[in-house]
Image (cartoon, rainbow, N blue to C red):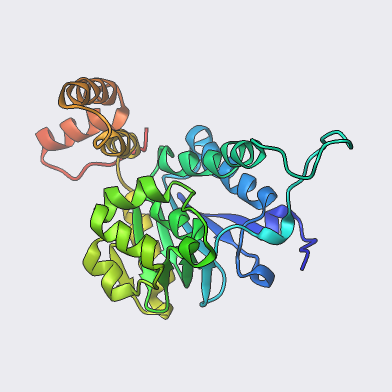
Length: 275
């Protein structure tokens, strides 16, 4: 079913003070993402790095059944290729992915401000990885995570084979991907896939509480911390030492670093500015 609403209504952005709430609102397709909505989501996250309006972000979706089941396959592949070419040309799927979903996930992972996923329902395939790309994950008791690819004879994508081993290890990743069984909240918490499980009624307030705490903190310090942690499993010790030294030096020039030292010396609570 086509959704003729403006993109701004299908992927909503709302500021509540210094917290940005990004909500996928496509109930007619279970909050699946078509390319225009996916790209809007990417552009929203990239803008947080330069507009400095948000000091924390919550990513969530409408309803209490589905967070995001992945890509909206009803949208189809749009192309302006020559009429004499066949419908499928070798290289098209690869290029479509590189220009599409693989621009979204780096935008979330590399976002300078902390991002909390508030998972209200089923997160499957790309939708599960959308939540896992966030820094912190709070899920409803009605949520579940599904590596659905094997059920359809597909290969996992959307950076799942990169994200999951880093979060839960190789053995558990293989279990999830090969059996493609639902992972329920209690086990997701036990495995370290999520940080917190709450009732559906508490999800918004729990995510909001954490986001407000983060928004009141030293934003640049958080950004450098994210950068270091996200590189930690891909770099050797010497490279990480260089990166840490660089991050520490850059952070010393922030107003919040000066405030942190001053508040310590003056034995008072710091007043973070976010820059």
